[in-house]
Image 1: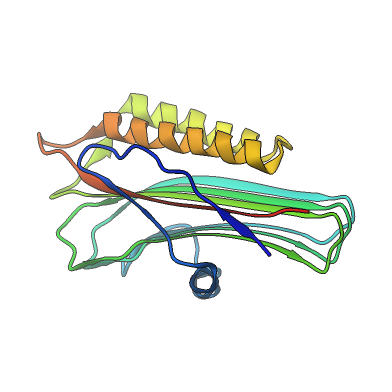
Image 2 (image 1 turned 180 degrees about the horizontal axis):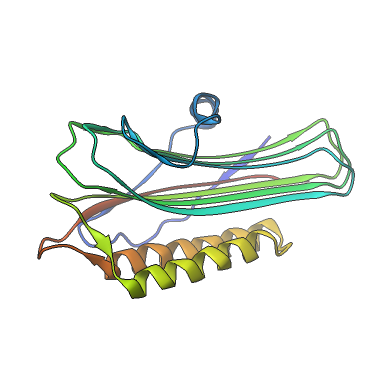
Amino acid sequence: MGRAMARAESPPRRARTRRLVAVPTVALIFAGLAALPATADTSGGANHVVLASVTVDGASALRSGVQVASAGSPTVASANIARAQSQSCTGCRAAAAAFQAVFVTHNANTVAPQNAAVAVNSNCTSCDSFAFAYQYVLTTPGPVYLSGTAQQQIAVIRQQVADATASGLPDDQLDIRLHDLAGQFKAVIDDGLRQAGVPADGAAYERAEIAPA
């Protein structure tokens, strides 16, 4: 069984930090969204799904992704999902990390983002699974964009997230590293968001879960 790990963080300007729902609900979210592409969905916003699954003894599946997207539909239900599973193997490891930022660019009637991390060890021996999901949703009264410097910084963070996920760090150290990168990710967006003199208002959602050996 997995044990949830979460760490409080300082909120961004006019932002609030909330933790996600319990694992059974997370599983239902994933079941409904696993088949969705990580591209903009005009009916509900962008969806970002990172999957890592391993079934071979001694093997590893290490996956990560960082997405920045805009949503302008009446209902924004963008999902950010990280799922790692080690199944029917010995000494195997799965790790998944998903970072997502969504800019809600119009007055949506409903803003209901979903953020979930699911880590599962199934029928395996001495295996380890780790999942980390970080989502930052900002509401704005109109279109926004990131400065060129911010886009370059996010490209660097994307590579750092990939390197961390593939590093083989113990789960607790990987959790610390990804939390640090999540803070950098949010700070870059806060500093680099550009709009006609109107600040954006955002909320951060995060969840990390480990199913250790």
